[in-house]
Image (cartoon, rainbow, N blue to C red; front, top):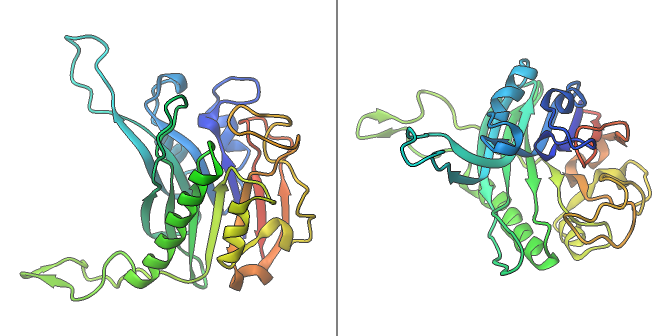
Length: 287
């Protein structure tokens, strides 16, 4: 099973051109796809509905979209017609197999007087693989500070635990005052096997990285035999979003729960990709 993570930066490539088909073509062969920075109705990307366009580009994939940023679009002029569209920004998950259940996890936002900041988050999905279900998340942590990322990780890890104890999208009796709220279906499972993919905006020697390791997650890059300090997933020397202390940072990851560590096969970073300022991070699972 080939899975890939890609922060597409709303499809603005290394040449500074917006080109969503080019961006999606770079990861179209994957079975499971985690995307970050997917947007709806922003002027910079042509006021298009990017999730809808991605669905057209990947018609064989199921998908869910989680906008952790959602605001009103003002009319172009005072007498303009009411615009029901919303300016949204978030994460997306796509799968060749049905997505049984999904939920948006929104992280707390820290206020900074001199720096733009917004809510970040994760979209969680339970994918029905041919032999079993698996829980997969597309994650985007904040870029401004370690302290904020630590609050994001606390929220994420607590939400993962709560998802297990809450037992899925619904639980308990099917009926409320005669209405069958289950529509005759069984509750979608919430398996313990979990994959976290995303733009974590952290490096391997950080407190945030260690927080995930201490929580029991394994770094697929390291588990595959790659040196922890190697790898680069963003443009070399890029410092626009996050303060880097080295020229080749690895800030995009695939973390897996310990029960999946032995299933990790090969990993690779696609250095030929040009569709974003990040690079696709590929993991092959022997499952």
